[in-house]
Length: 264
Image 1 (cartoon, rainbow, N blue to C red):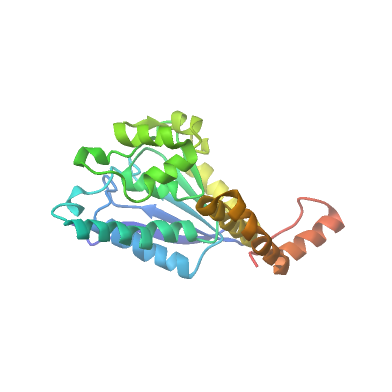
Image 2 (cartoon, rainbow, N blue to C red):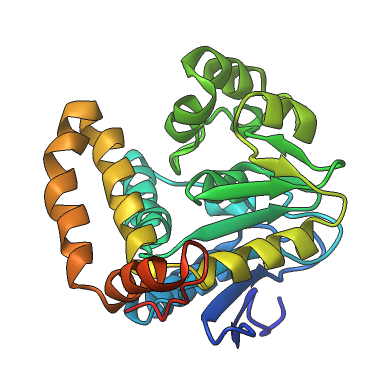
């Protein structure tokens, strides 16, 4: 196995001065989630959590987004070791990805299987190319997806479709995923579209975007009543941000749509 890191994390600055991060799966030829990929993602997400950008793009290079998990990761695990593996992947990959206090965009240009799709479902917005296909095919090794895929797919598409998707192990195209509400939009040049969207979101009111994520997370964990209960404090805190104060002044002085944001 090559000593080259299985991912690539770079930071860029938009024309408007906002920092974005681009995290690329770079483990050719299949971008398999082997131990090197998992270790790299843990390292990258720890760095991003410690120093969040104002928006992030998660993408892949090569013909595929990912061919799935390297089955060697599962070979010979005991019950306790299997449970510990999933706890670790939630704690160090899925939950940190969801908790980033900024918009996270996923770009799927091709086949997106198992762990890669589960990571996509932990992102805020999923964009796909017309030829992209998606699958949770863990049934081929007698397993069910265990990095949060079934429940996050059920949240977006409904429980009946999630059961079908997981139990059949079939591949579903981008158009079907868009019809189901899983994919937000389909673009011929999905990398360019995803980069443009990431740049646009990065230049917005970052603290307000983080508040949106907090409110939706409250709904996910406890329903509308719980989200209502946390909204006053979460949204109220925005009145202490420079972005809100500046945008209100801009609106009053020159009208809507003219404000610029710094993320503070």
